[in-house]
Image 1 (cartoon, rainbow, N blue to C red):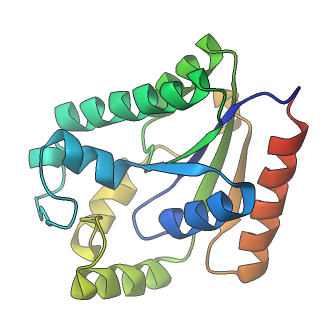
Image 2: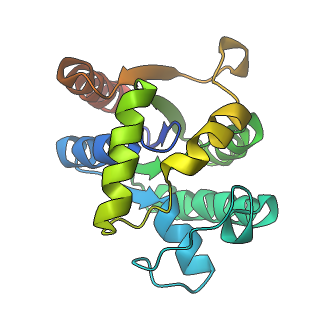
Amino acid sequence: MLMENVVIVCGLMGTGKTTFARQLGKAAGLDMIRSDVVRKQLAQIDVSTHEYENFGAGIYSPQFTERTYQALCDQAAEYLKKGRSVIVDAVFGKQRQRHIMLDTVRRMGAGLIVVECVCPDDIVRGRLVARESEGADASDGRWALFPQQKKSYEPLNVSEGLHHLTVQTHQADSMSGAIEKVCGLLSTSP
């Protein structure tokens, strides 16, 4: 019998988390919980409304961010209770945020797979500038905030004890290889 899993798709803004998570969801038949949407739902803001706050302010304050990550864990737990795996798309920029999710899935007897999305800063800039000018995405991420987020981001490391892989989202073969690998992990979990 296969174990349910939570697949965290994490990384800095503009690194392709949502694109990767959508492609993985399609390939693996999994739903996605997206922090950009959950955060706005908690704030009772329409997901298409942009809250261009300063870094760490408003709905992006540390307190509201903790509330958002707790809601992500709660929603993932609901999927696990129903016997379903799920993808969670969020920065997970702090070690404690990743470990709150790890504790949640362990309590429920499920597995955790972490995919960290990365790409060169110049590509991130192009993506963020395009996203902001289009205005169609739920994300409020923008290039002006990227240096601050990058500075505060706590990279994944081996000592965290998380099963993780890194995907270069600007390389199609890296994306497809990572999707294939995660699908394989999902189909072989104990």
